Length: 134
Image 1: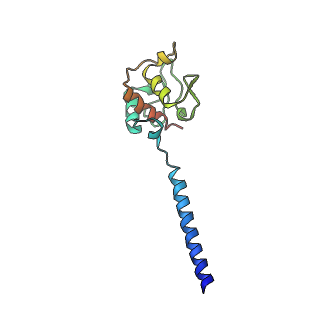
Image 2: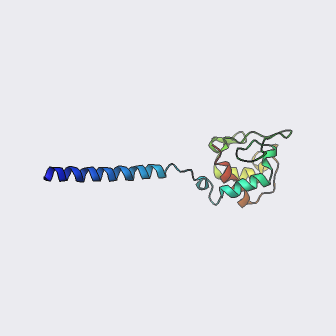
Image 3: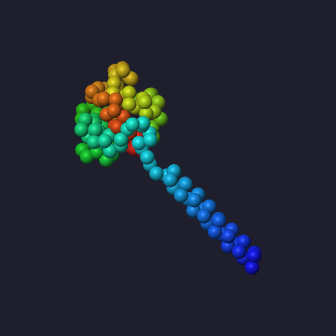
């Protein structure tokens, strides 16, 4: 009788451990883009990208009418969240992205990216959204 009790206890403990391990692994799979940019809100960033009409120059997935068909259009932002560099050589890190969005000419003199007059917080929200584009 004891060996069976031991096997049942071992099986229950193993199942519990596997269930816990799966839960921990699945928790790591969620895509929390807000963590990419401290203080940034993805949904607000999407609204700001639309409001500032970034899609006039860039193709942006998830933004209606963002087809980048303007003359002198900028690059597609399809995968900007996983690129190593932005603006042709600036490490793609949250602080750099925020700075680039706020004052592009200070980051890369001669760029065609226009200054949009963004506040620090607006740039954080927009960067949070852009990091979801993977």
